[in-house]
Image 1 (cartoon, rainbow, N blue to C red):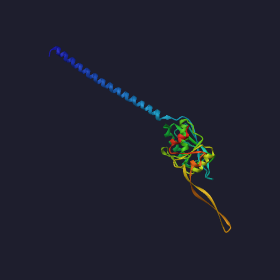
Image 2: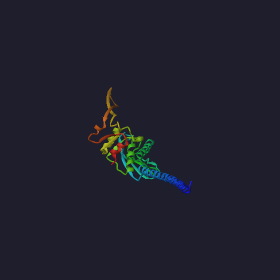
Image 3: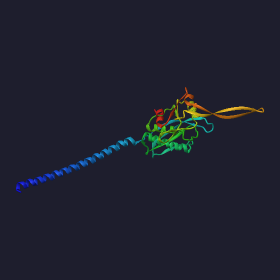
Length: 261
C-alpha cells in the first residue's frame, strides 16, 4: 500500500468511528429526551388528576328538613339537620343532644361518606359536624340518612337546600335511598308544616296502613267498646293532592336534583 492509500484508509477509519460515536451520542440524547418527556407527562397527568379528585373542602354549612315520628303518640314531627365543615382530621362528629341512638349515628357516618364520594373530594383534613334540631324529640333509626347526605353535599358545594322540601329515607352504600316506616304520619307532618314537596323512597308513594276503628256492642245491657285495625291502601300523591306534591327517589342524585338549588 502506498502512502496516499494509507492516508485514505486512516481517514476512512476515523470518519467511521466519528459517525459511530455521533450516532451513539444521538441515541443517548434521544433516550434522555424521551425520559424527560415521560416524566413531564406523568407529572402533568398527576397534577390534572389531583385537581380533579383531591379538591380540598372549604368551610361551609348545609341544612335540610327531616321528619320523624314521636314514640309517645305516634304523630309525625318535623325538624332540621345541620352540617358544618371545619378544618380537622377527617372526623365525622355527631351532636347527641337531642339523644341519637347508635343506628342513627351509624347512618350519619354513612351519609357523610356518600356525600364525600358523590362530590369527589378529599376530606382527610376536614371535620364534618352534624347536629339535629327537632324540638327535643329523640332521634332513632336511620330514616334521616338521605336528608343528612343532601345537607352535607350542599355544605361541601357551597349551595343552598330548598326549605320547602322534606325527605324521609335511609342512605345506603352507593348512594341508594332505602325504605322507611310511618311514611303516612311523616307526610302529614310535612304538609302541616308548610312543605310543598315531600320525597319518599322508591315504591313508597303507594302504601298500606292500618286504620283504627271503634265498634260498640251491647251485651245484657252493658256497652262494650272494641278497637280494631283494618288495612287500607293509599296513594300519597292522591291523598295530598292540592296540598303538597309527593315524589319518589331512588338515589342521592335524585334527591340532589329536587333539593339543592
